[in-house]
Image (tube, rainbow, N blue to C red; front, side):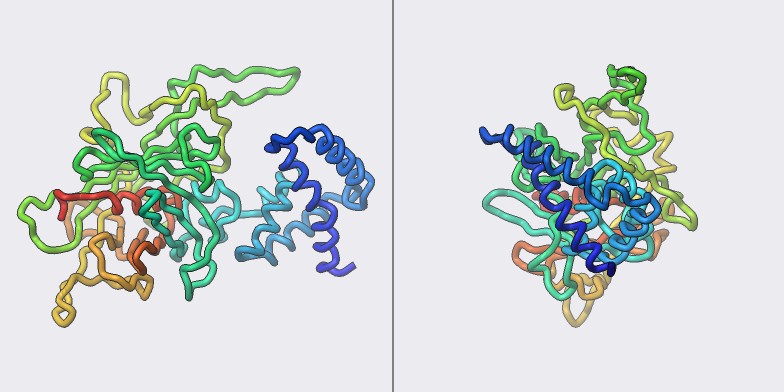
Length: 402
C-alpha cells in the first residue's frame, strides 16, 4: 500500500467519525439520540478496522509522515484532523508537532500562546472592520497577497466610561468574556496612553494564589482542578506624551511581565505554555499575580514590580530616520509596509536605560498596506496573542500622543 493510499484510507474512515463527534458535542437538534447511535456504530466499525490493530510504532511513523508532508495551510488542517480522531492519536500528534519556536509553524490553537519562531518573522496580517469595531488576525498563506489567510484570532473593541477594552477570542463569531474561546483582553486608560494586556490564564510558571479549588481524587485517579477564569496581567504598554506637539512617529514601550530579558540573548528561554488549562468561568475575576496583598495600586500607575523590572524584557520602538527626498520618517520594513501611517512601528529589545542601547533584531513590526489592512510580523520570544494585543493598542485614539 502506497503512502498516498494510506492517507486517503485514513481520511475516509476517520473523517465522518470526527464530524459526527463534533455534531454530538455541539448540536442542539432533536435528533441527538440518532446521531449518538450512529456515532457509536461508527466507533464499533473503527474497532474492527485495520487501524485498530496497527502497531504503535507503525502508527507513529504514519502520523510523522503526515505531519512532515502537510507543512503549510490549508493542507495543515489534516494534522489537526488526525489529532481529533481519538485520545491516543492526539497524544501522539502532540509529541510529534513541535512548538513554533522550533518548527516555525502554527498548528494547534495553543500555538498562538507560545513564543514565535527564532531567527525569522512569522508573517501575519490584520483586517479591521470599522462598522462593527472588530479586528481579525490571519496567518499569511501567500506572501504576494493579504486577501486570503488562515484565521487566527479576533478582537472586539468595547468603549467604557473611563477606558477602552479589546476582547480577544479564538472564535470570530463569539467574541465575549463568557465564551469558552476567550483568551484575553487589552485595556487602556482614559487618555489611551497606557495599556495592560491580560491573559485569561496564568502564564507558564506563574503561581495562582487565589484559586480555591483543590486537587481531588475520583476513583483511583488524580483529577487536576479547574483554574478560575480571570485576568492575569502579562504586559504593560505606554505611549510617550507629545506635550510640545512635535512632528514624528509615536514613541512606545512595552514591559513584558512574563518574559525575562535574558530570553533575547544567546541560549535564552521564554516561558512556553503547553496546553489550555480547564477554566471555571463562574469564578471570573481579576488576579494580579505579580503583586502582594499590600500592594494593590492601579495597574496603569504601578506597572510591574520594581524589584522585578530589571529582569523583564522591555521592548521599545525602533527610532526611524528622516528621509530628505521623501520628507518623512522612514523605517525599513523589507517591503511588508506600503502606506505611511503614524501607526506603523518596529519593536526591538532594549538593552539598558540608554536610548542608543537596543538590539538590532526586530521582534515585532506593524504597518499599513491598505485602508483597513495591516501587516503584523513577530518572532521569538513573544507569542501571536501578545503581538496581536500590542498592535491593537496602536489602533486606539491617542490625542495626547500626536
